[in-house]
Amino acid sequence: MFAMLGTLVRVLLRKAEPRLLCGFRTSQPPCRRMTRSRAWAAGSAPTCQPLEDCLVLNYGGTRMRFNYVWLRDHCRSPSAYNSQTNQRKLDTGGVDLGIRPENATVQDGQLILTWPGGHVSEFSLSWLAENSYEAQKKTTVQPRILWNYDIYKNANVPSAKWDTFMSSDDEVKKFLQNYLLYGIAFVDDVPATVEATETVAQRVSIIRETTYGRMWCFTSDFSRGDTAYSQLALDRHTDTSYFQEPCGIQVFHCLKHEGTGGRTLLVDGFYAAEKVREESPENYELLARVPIRHEYIETSDHHQNHMTGIGPVLSVYPWNNEMYLIRYNNYDRSVINTVPHDLIQRWYEAHRDLTTELRRPENELWVKLTPGKVIFIDNWRVMHGRESFTGLRQLCGCYLTRDDVLSSARGFGLLA
Image (cartoon, rainbow, N blue to C red; front, side, top):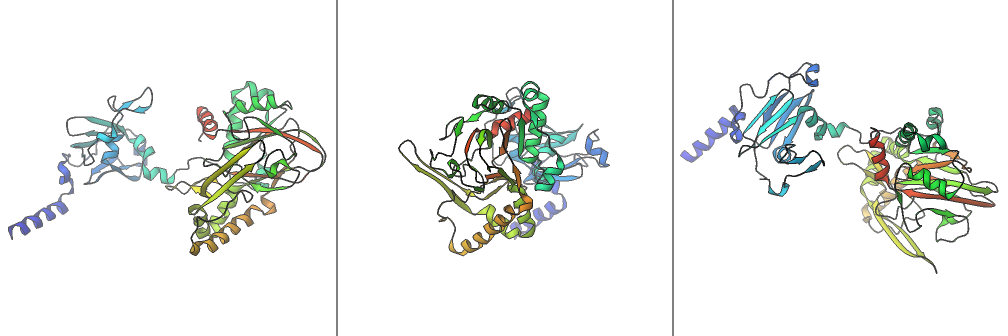
């Protein structure tokens, strides 16, 4: 009976005084000292409230929750973090998973936590707000302008010029900004050689060597086991969908064409996918959830390759549902044996919705690549194809590492 009474008293105390949980020593009222932070411009002082399993921070009009192990793991004190190398020094595996701070206060725009044993962590409130889950849910990782033919043409996006591009960082920055926003960018007046194409590509990234080599130059001679090495028309597609990590950037330069046809087709895959999301959310979700296989098999006297990549048609960040990768290649899509029977019909219907959007004439941008015009294509977003052609058509190009292109952009202060 006494045990039951004691339990009832503890429950009532918890309801009456939530600040007593976990042994916190808090002031009255908790964490309300005035600061000159940006949050105060909104008219309310930042506050923190220690709860049993997390710390609640109200700042800038947003209520954020921070796990205690997370707070200890992200301590930026010299003993926990090397600010010169931007690397963690703290052994996360050694942090007590039941850790709780003994004291928590807000002072002069900082959250100050005192941990058992006396270690003190100080966090800028703006840093916490920027890195909170609540903020990331509302934040776009990479801002983009989704486009169809009219949107892109009306934007009148300028091409970079070879001479300026190779000598001016400002020109490279403008080029990268256009590339990030639209997924395509051009450099004009490039000498029509493989060497010049390599030089202009290396201005923004490291060249990625693949089974096709580092820099490749080809004609319609069927020298490789790929439809691209023909004069046939190619439907819109992304390249290397059969890689576990598809190549990030595709570079094309038409060095010579003595014939007709051969225009390049460009389609913003994210624009089409967004239309599917607006009109049929369940189909969009299915394309983003169900993994399928793409495959490249090449058996010839000179090349033996068998590549397999597995992933959904659409890849999205789970915290904000932002698209970051599309795998769409009807040529290289392998046997579908990763989809259960009760989903396969629905998957085909969802795939048809996306295909219909991708093939709308108003979404197509046709470009005639000529000697001197180099195009950079975001292969994780923009699909390319071509119309059939006659005569001798010589194309060169390469793949670039996506990480290094984005690193270059961030070096210019661009969001990437």
